Length: 345
Image 1 (cartoon, helix red, strand yellow):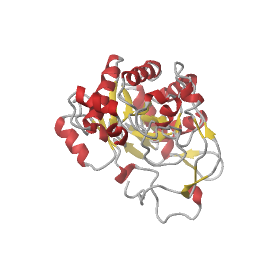
Image 2 (cartoon, rainbow, N blue to C red):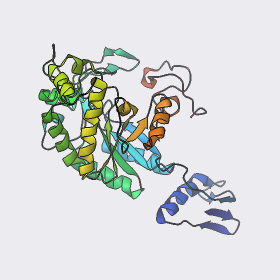
Image 3 (cartoon, one colour):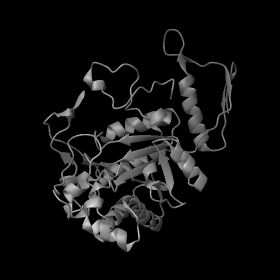
C-alpha cells in the first residue's frame, strides 16, 4: 500500500520485498518541482500486487556478448519495472559463453567465431573474429547482484539443437557418423543443423555441465532450450537410429522427448526443475516439466490441458527483436521480425 497525502508518504507491505517494490513505484512517481533539486509527488492511494509469479526478460548473450556491467544495468532496469526473472541464454550455435572447468575447450574454441553477419544485411559477413565468455566468478557476481533486487537468474544451456559451438569444441558430442560432418562455431544467424548425438558420452557431458552450473544458480529452474532442433542429422545417423530402435521410439521427435526426459532426471537429481521452449512437448512431455511458449498459443492450450506449468513468451507480443514501425534505414537498428509496437505489447 502506498498513500501520498499533503501530510506525507506512507508505504506498507507484508514483506521486505513489497517495500522494495513500493520504493520503485515511489521513484517512478517522483518529479522535480520547479527550479532547484526539490522533489514532489502526486497525491495517490495505491494498493498493488503482482498479477504474474514469473515476470521475466530473456537475454541472449551468445549471438551478441554483453559484459558483466551491461548485465548489471539490465538487472537495474528489471528492478525498476518490478520484474523478477532474468532468463540468461548462455549457449548457442554462435557462441558458448560460460566457463565449464572440466571442459576448457568450450570457451577456448566454442566462445569464438570467425565472423558475424553485417548489420542490415545478415547474408554478408563482416570478416571480424568475435568472442567472449563469463567465468564462473562472473556468474556468481551477477547472481548475487540480482539477488539484491529479489531477481532470480535462470540459466539456459540450449540442447539438443543450437549446439554448434559445443560440438565444434568437442566433436565427439555430435553425430560423427553422418556424411560431411565438419562442425564449427556458426558465423551467421538462423537455425543450424548440428545437433547433439544421443550418446551416453553426451549425457555424461551434460550432467558434468549441470554439476558445475546448478550450484551457482540457486533458483528452482534450469532452462534446457529444446527449440529449433532439426532432426536431419539424427535421421541420417545409424547410431541415432539404433537408439530409436532400442528405446522403441517411432521417430526423431520421440527421440528428442527421450533426450529431454534424460535431462529432466539429471536436473531433478540436483534439485532443479526443467523448463524448455514449447518444442519439448513434441514427441511427448513429462507432467513435471515447465513449458515456455514462444510459437503459436495452441501449445499453451495443449500444455494446460495436460496440467504442465506454463510461462508465456509468445512472438506475437513479447519479442524485442521485432520492429516498432517502418524498417529503419540505419542498419544499427536492424530487426528480425515484423512490427510489434508497444501498444500491442
